[in-house]
Image (cartoon, rainbow, N blue to C red; front, side):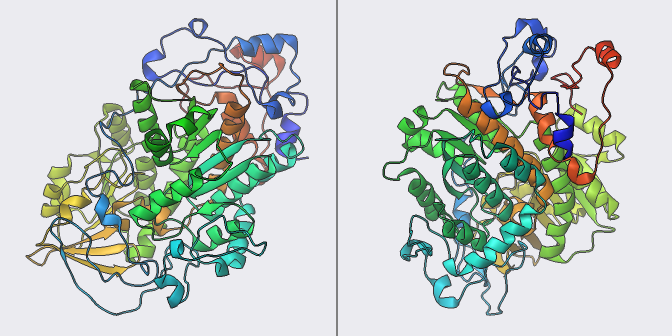
Length: 579
């Protein structure tokens, strides 16, 4: 019997009555009794919740508070991957995933680019994405491909990669115990039966496991890529071979990106009733072009801080057509994915792209949130001299007490060897900063959006762009000074390294629990607003993964539970506890 089964034998994994939400910072002083009670909707969870009447009454009294977004940073404009000033920098040669780019980035004033013929293989994503020359020269949109069953409702780089992609997915499954347990426990109950989920996420092996788990739980899905350069072509081909309508490939252009979303939406006789988004581009596109589709949806689950910003903007404008769950600020996302995944992948990304020695480098980390903390600790452990820039006095004080000097960017930019942005904001590093950086300095972004670094300001005639290997560009100034720009300013670890599957298992399990909750909610239970997962759901997601570490939880005695005023089955912390 696994740990989850042992722990919840005779006690509720996710009780039949719980809140979905937590207090924002400004609401912490509000008493619990002033907020409405929200009951859990999921039949999968409720069916496994043998609570006594007293327990139900106790949990049912827990308050539920909306994620008001008041603690979120207002960015003031659309955060779409392409609807930004530097969006034109994305257009790629069809061979960009495997050979040097030989065309200049489009701009009002086209920069000069050195042209050379050295063959550069793409090995940065930890996967095989190469195809033969003929296929690379042809856009996937111009090819009619079929899978072994004769289906053609997909668009991927090459179906020849499907077998290899299946091995990638199987390898990821070995490190994703939470999803496998959910499949085993819930396959017979089909908690997502008749759910039609439109998925916009990274098309990599770990998220392929997520998609196949959704199908096992009864859902019908269509999916597209949320990032133009993070897709593993072999994984996309494997999903297409399995009969999943999937649209995306590594090295998409802006036009390809929106075309793929359109192909997901515009399917004959198919209308989504749930949205799983990463970055908000799918939601934005539906609001803009297909408002009728969103009105039929029961809910949206959003993974990234960028997408959550945009959801709150829709709420303020009165344009959010259905309830949404902010997953990025849930404990099992922020404390595990943002922290542990970034802690390991940031060094791997830098090594794969630049082969640099981390020890002794002068490093500036912009932002000391969960991602910034992970980057600081990882690079410091490798011997780097790390300083931090921060706008929040609480985060700045944390950085000081962790041993990092807090500085303003202009004060140190001249001597910095490596700059990493991790703020979730725009134009954190501007052209003025880059004009002062020393030659050979490396510039990259660990945030979701690609506008933390003002890449658009580098598209001027006097600068020379040289694409030296996949996800690495030299930008040379007239005086010969050169900067190294990684992943075109996009999220570094998603584009230049592999990610720990166990951490993504935690995130994906939380996404599935959130989808089940919104899908099974009674009509009118949730307003058209943004919510957060309750502690109990976060605890359940964590519990699913403990068995793989051979962890054994201590159980409270009745006396101990009464002393601190909680149920023996949890939740074990208050809604505003931040871990």
